[in-house]
Image 1: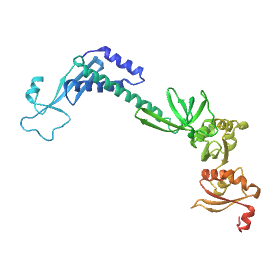
Image 2 (image 1 turned 30 degrees about the horizontal axis):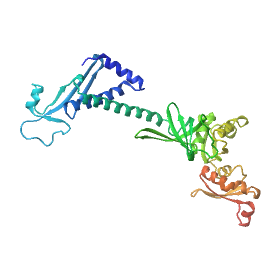
Image 3 (image 1 turned 135 degrees about the vertical axis):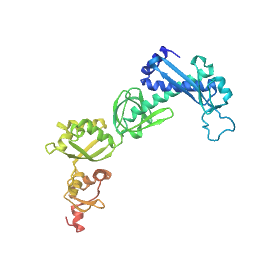
Image 4 (image 1 turned 45 degrees about the vertical axis):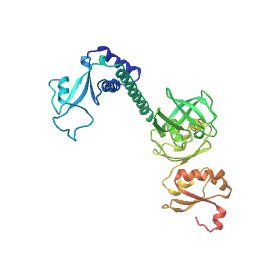
Length: 358
């Protein structure tokens, strides 16, 4: 079959659907095979594209049976044909041969043509979905910008990139979030799954990694590795605690992260609807690390350090006990999560009463 227009259409379909020509060829191949099977009543067909010759070849396949009894080890995927019937199709046919019979698309019946179109569209849509999925999969574990399209009782409908729409459940938004249609927000992509109807993207604003990604975006020294985030914890919508270490002695880890006049940390807090960000200096010294993690509360001493169990006792001034513990235990909870240590806290007076030496 010589058809230059067919190969031109392949390129047009590829361009219209943001696909490669190879992907469109695959869809057409599967469609032509489905039509060939319907037309000839066979189980297997072969399609060959010869673009340089503007040629399309379609073959139905038969396996020519040997003389005598059937062998049990014959490949059952083929349609079998007796030698006499095979010779009627091709006088040179031989037994135990895979005989290919050429068929022209113009000979396809209505039902065969219908199967061609159906299978072509089915495969093309599968490829398009897979392409979208692979593109979205690259966003997994990343922070993305989104636009609020709709506000419902239990979720926000948001648009991520072009024509990618998903939902931000309100349980995954911050208590302080009060978004309106048209608002631009930042969300963290927790997962991308392929569903029957296509890819589905899951997003969150409560995930602790959102704070990390915001820090990377607004603090170049974190993005390039000069400053490392070594510990982080979060009470979404209220407070985060971040342990940082500078790999350059000339770069102040806290000053660089906060920014001039607090500009950097304020931007991060703004995108988290006012969530406060506590920063502390990371230390390889266990006692220093524990003391730093409890900031803004001052720590008099750290004792009873058990590296194996990762437990320790922090002694704080009497007047700072409530600050060290925090409202509903928030400060110590975040310190424990960020540092990786289980921290008990006592006031100086209580430590003295118990005879704790430090």
